[in-house]
Amino acid sequence: MRGVGQGLGAAALLLALPAGLVAEPPEPGGVQRLPLLIHAAEGPRQLRVEVARTIPERRRGLMERDHLDEDAGMLFLYRDTQSALSGFWMYRTLIPLDIAFIGEDERIAAIFTMWPCGSANPSECPVTYPGVPYRAALEVNAGAFEAWGIAEGDCVSWPGSVGHCLPSAAEEGVGPAE
Image (cartoon, rainbow, N blue to C red; front, side, top):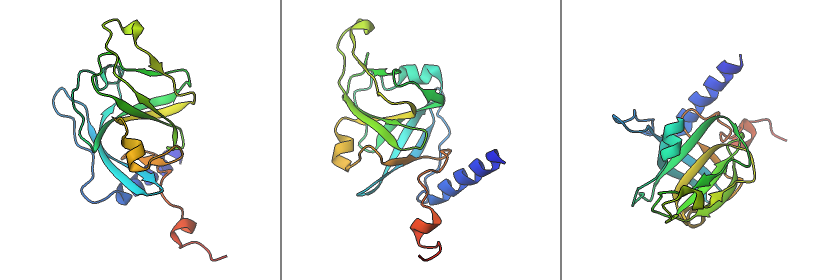
């Protein structure tokens, strides 16, 4: 029954996303794009993100890009929880980025800004370690999270996520009165 419950949660999440926001099939040789919502105190922030699920997609990331649209980003998804000591680097990445490490509960556990590494030697590029376990990571333009009022503890949802960001019946005002 666990799989059924997760399927219902994912279906409910899709219904909670604004109309027209559905996953796009990957372009030939490209990665899939998904709508993503960050549920912040100042209200939800909608992005369209590329998804890196495979080792080659995650290894490539946003390398060699000279531009990232304001409402875009890259979501790195993992099947298993990643160690707090499993970090990201900016080797061959040309634009400064913010990264949010997202925990099992789909909440942002840590946010960092990462700067391009100009070295041709990858071992000379610094690694950003989250210091917390994570199941996903979201990269956006540097300064975007602060400008959008997004902070640690905010919830992130996308098609296929478990649905931790969905409000409970009590939060929606349909639960029993106290």
